[in-house]
Image 1 (cartoon, one colour):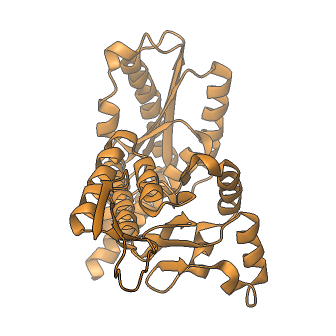
Image 2 (cartoon, rainbow, N blue to C red; image 1 turned 180 degrees about the vertical axis):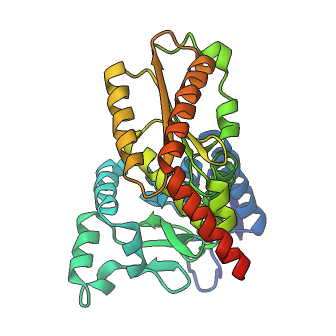
Length: 365
């Protein structure tokens, strides 16, 4: 006869078959595990719901631990920003094992995880003794961490290994890897989606040529409401002279080289500050809560950088403890215009000669 048991917390129906044949007097007890696609789907839905709440894949690790009746479930991955993460869930009696596993896994670079994985990204090792002869070092690492068997799958993002899912010492459903594959695919897709979102947001807020913040991003600064929140402010403006003529005569590639040269100089001098491509040929360094001495040292260093470039770039700046963003930008622009006029006067003979050469070249084309 057959006795049906209850459904346990892993959503696995227990079936006990007793006395298969009274004539043979066999009284052995077998436990069968009956699974269906619906059960896997229900577990995966729990994973998705849990992810919405914790966003760190803790629900994934917990589900894997329960389904495989394992000592520990591990998820190690690099997020969309390239930061390493380690998530694990272990049974109460496996605290020591979990700590050893964490130290062991954390010492292994994600890129080196491919050593024990198959070409399709999966791995199943029912006994670590298979490594004893060919890879004694790895065998000892697993044994020291009390990993006797494991299965898992690599997490891939854009065809590159980004992490791995590991189930340590599984005691049930060990030959069913569907749930691991589904969770691995889910994590990879979430990382990929976040990368695309970040790339879109970056493109919306950053200039494509220089990588500096766009002027539209600066416009979102609440000029009237944020003045009082700042203890001091320094602003530095630059303007590349004759950029339009350079683009017209030599092409945008030449003009872009000049833009990037100035942008790189500003990144070096005003490291950690808010840097904007303020106009086609203008840049702005926005330096809140900075001392006058520190800002003026930066301004002097920037002036020196601009002087050493092989093309003319004007600069102007303003610093004040009585912060008024609009007024200080106007002040910086006034000084910028004075510097532009100085540079034009210094370069008039050279500028006229260059114009004549360009005209002769165009006439001969």
